[in-house]
Image 1 (spheres, rainbow, N blue to C red):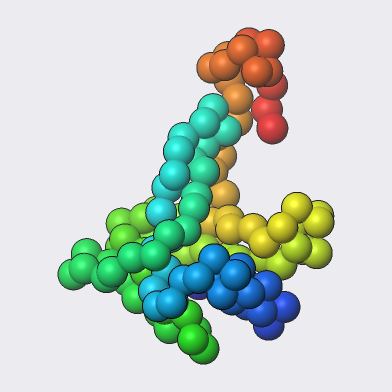
Image 2 (cartoon, rainbow, N blue to C red):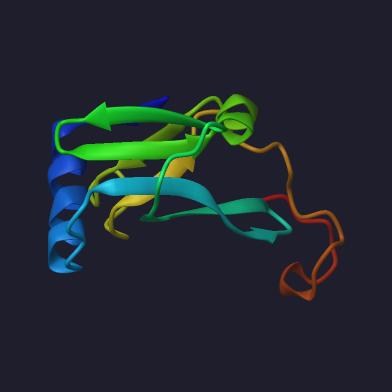
Amino acid sequence: MIFIDDEAYKEFKKILTESNVEYCNIRIGIDNYTCRGPIFGVSPGTATTGDDVEKINEITFIVDKSLNKQFGGFIIVSNKENNNQGVGLKPVVQSSLGCRKCCKRCGNKGLKG
């Protein structure tokens, strides 16, 4: 369900520590939708019966079962793997949505991105 290498784990754990997150129960969810698809985020959380739970070292990751099924799990990438844009989160199954005349940011030209 969660894929994370040692470097990304250390960076992610450091962010949690610096943010004073005491209990490392981290929920992965959808923060927002854009014309390019969902934007994923993390927040402290508590598991329910509708969740998949996976503990990796000191961090327990929580993902709604339907979200996990839809996206095939999640990959947490290090700053380096994320083109020096910080630790990143992406789904295993990438959305096939592209911008198709849905927003002014792409000039309503149906640009795919």
